[in-house]
Length: 395
Image (cartoon, rainbow, N blue to C red):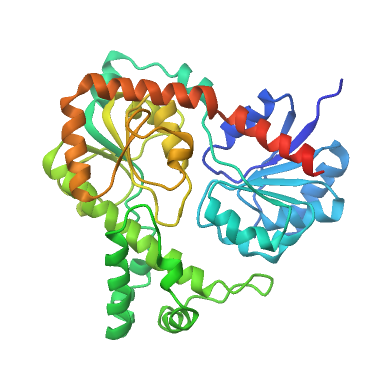
């Protein structure tokens, strides 16, 4: 029996190789199209290239991580189902009007995103949480020398968002008039005190967003995109600002009381008490960090409203103990206090770190429980099977 074929459009998203492996495990033949479009919306040469391959290859599906409008344009013309699975949030490309194309089958890992984008293409937007590659984690071996290198009390792998914060890069502390700057800073500080719920989308009005834009001065979106001024202010400016300040403040507090190994490309001057370790290779060294650290922290970006980020599955899959902020969807997949644990405030974070450093057996057992849960329920292969089951139902 001929294997079904998938053309995977790559654009260097973290996890692509693992998802491709999961697709292959499900019995599909996978070819990768790795050309990079000049624009994710329009690029004649890219469109011709991918069109030629799709026409000649007899592919059942075109697939990508995150939504790529230019791929949707091609698949719409050729009547080939296009599966996109978002692993990032926010994802600006979802505001493209190509989202409504009938060829699209959009899978989102955050239920808030599903609720927002489902009306834009009814029957073609679905909820699908993320997973991890247990086969790869199991192949990772840690030598005694590496164990000494990566062993620490607490570790954090990720950006401080200082280089990603548009509020910082656009110098909004100087550009905004005093009354608007005060209002925005008040919103950010209020949000920082609330764990498990992001209210910025609810309180940023269209009028306030339009006024903010006058001082920020970013370029208008292309004509075939929805007006995203409100979303841009709430998520790209204030949301990322919240993430930046939260990570700096929490990690500085941790570093003052414990040995904190920080794996990041962000400026080390923001948390001088931390042990800066630079960037770490996602596939080879990151799982060793997770496995050797006594406590691994996850601080979810404020732009992820309810969903479970990829980092959580990766830490647990690699066998690390996870201490994370609360996300609304977490209890749907894991038992808090048994598979992982959460913190609900700055003080609670410090208390939980003290507790789990003092209770090694409990900490190790939770890490083992978490890895077992991920292995049994949340691998990429299992997620791909779920996606393909949905595709069989709706087509």
